[in-house]
Image: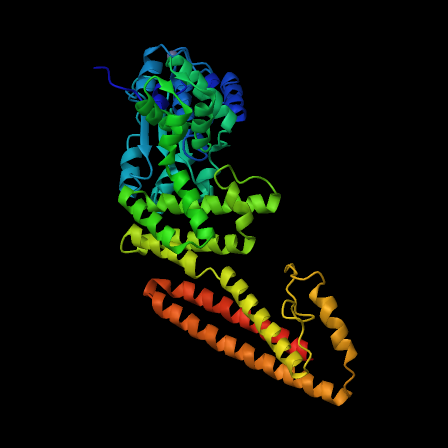
Length: 490
Ligand SMILES: [Zn+2]
């Protein structure tokens, strides 16, 4: 039985010219090797699956090909072949994330002084270099400052900001861009053609989009699709497969959260837990979804097919609050008894603690109070407006009128027709204000009680920071309203 080699590895480019999606970096490297300008350390940054370690290995070939230093390694000499299959002894590749301790870095650099045994250069590739400990960086820095002639470093990182500037400044730095959907799409077609696999147009587009800027991710998803589809990719099968992928969970959850459907959110969460999804990844997905919606709001663009239906249902205030809650939820996931608990608390927080909806409910309640106070005052004066119409001056904007005449027009003449002495008008105004303040105070009390009740429901040690934030917002809302009241009285 022939073992299956994953597409990302099978079609990993072996020459600079074959690297797709990074034209500037590739051209700069080709020029440098053609002119014989060798740097002793290179650093590639960029998100996962955009070609960092691929370029690092190609550089090892460019340096060690038996034809001499070249931008076009032959790919067939012993050195090129053994670098390609990972058996080249002078290529030392380590993962900074799993070997980040200073002893391990010392051990790695221990025999740096010894000459290479096969080729011209010893090449040290340190992947995820940002994960090294501080003292590991110090050790590495010493080697970077005075590297032996026969040593080259290639560092790769998804997080260049975490690499000390002293290390960065000693490297020739390249930032690799996320792959465009078109680049991934075109490359997938090349790969599928080489594999003799039939496909329909939409299936490739779906796979390219699912890669989200990462060629490796797109190829891995294609591997999965091929495992399901066999030798023919169809839109239906790919859709079915992606249906269970996180992107879909994100859209479903966001929709329920935006529309505050408590029960469905709980059901989706139970389903996710049963499927054993990665909650950290899901939170990150939700953050991206919220970001996409916020950007779409700000720039009047589309947030993508899955999220587009939500655009009109959500406002920017909610998005800001939700983003904050998700970021904090992601950060605190490590302190939760288990990831599921942390995730569920974050979802409940989004349902209960995001104040924007409560504010609009409060606004409505205040408006309702003003309408009823005004009605009372009008009743006292025996000038009740027609039952179908709202009192003058307190009609809600955009509210539909029930009669042929608008409420303002129907009640305004009644107000004008009464000619009371000004003293009685003042008394009425005072009564009006007193009643209004009294009712607002009642509302405040009710809201405070509700607030306290919610706090009691959700208070845990973990929640304290959010409670503080919530209280601040809560008080700010009250203060604004009272200031508005004072302004009205003045
Ligand atoms: Zn060669």
